[in-house]
Length: 634
Figure 1 (cartoon, rainbow, N blue to C red):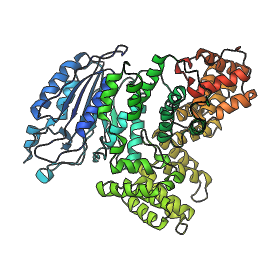
Figure 2: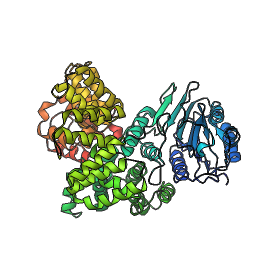
Figure 3: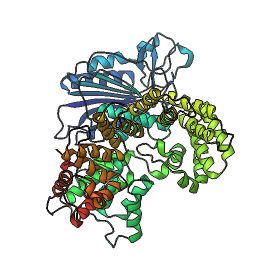
Figure 4: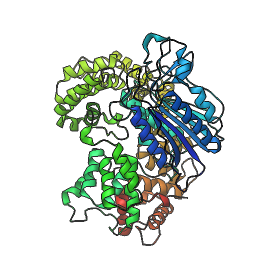
């Protein structure tokens, strides 16, 4: 087994040198193989190369090869502004020390550990030479493969060291991570889907990754990080853009392409632009059913938008479309390389198919949209088959039992579904706990049992379920089923918000706006964060504060930015309000909206802060393919 190393020059425009060592060990000689680390390492290396990293990639490395590539990495990192280490494979801790396992390790006695593994301290010493940030991602918290050969502790130990290190673990300290049911582990899959979010701070990225992994495993696996960074870091330094869903629709609308429109619906069956896409598809491509910019948009700009979407979404049909439409495009080679990595939808594992058909909307993650119960009812039989196979294939992950329960409920067999929810809840699945609590709270399929429902909510909240925290908070505010406890309710909302819940963050904004907590300045921050995380009503709420100067400095320019982001991302409420009830907004804010629409090339009338047909047409074009983040500046 040898060493595969890749060195690529960083693209122009990246500030500072970025270097990475990526290792994935799957094919072990003395112990069982792992399905995904080789794939995880290759896919992460390709993603990092696209983000300007010089990457050393090693897969299935012996101890000698791991030692050599570590020395090469130490040399490369000496002048690096960012040095990153990623490892996927077997790893364990002994006496608080972490060891990574080469493919040729054969451990028969405790003394073999240090002699035949790679101590994590050696990697850290190599990275300490880098003058900049040091980032470590360990997707290695798996069971000790050598059994009772020696006494070890489960998972990996937390590591602490000097300033400017960040350690990200696939799961919480002392716990064991899952290898995943598809091409990638749950942790790496989440990383891959969030690395290309423009302008996203590292802390925000880890929150998004943690939220996705918790959802994908039902709370069985919770990524963890330990940071001593002294400055912020962003993987994708492009300016903040729209959500992945809105970017998808913007590309589909500007291309006026049936295939892309249908792919949007498949990816976001209940998306904010669902009605517009359905209306477009019903009228056919021969009529311009959308008020979109004319198709004379520069092909280079169109190609870049499609490539950005394809790279960020990691969807094969979009990568295929890019290669087909732009065979001489700037990113064809990278697109073809991604196509070689990403499996076809028809090759999905039972687990992946089960997730796609059954995932609860509140558990939706990047790459896996939530499915409303009504839609699930239409596909209940296929969903039951997929989830039953997933349960058999992955018996140690109760999340698939919870998904099978939801599919079974959709088929009409509520009694069987309740038994499955109970089984999954007993084994620690958070969604099963919340679903079972709701059934007990409402008396659906069983006698109403409020104490049992509250206990399940509390258990799920302790496990990290944002939905359980929110439901408990509402109950504590109301003081009916539980004694009223406003302080604890607020604490629960804050905990859910810190975990990435946009709904909890928005509710905190409402409380701050009403003076229950903090002040309107806090409300503005909550509303902005809620909107960024998908609660798009936050844009309108923030715009109101800024437009009126309600407890904050009046700022028409930022109010306009919020309105235009919301007009592109929400379900159409802001567009309707700006066109039908424009008198609710100040002329100064409307004028700033017009200025930005003009800069985007969709508005050519007077900038007078007054509504009218041209203003309405410009807003519709903005929503339907004309969004331009570059004009949203103060």
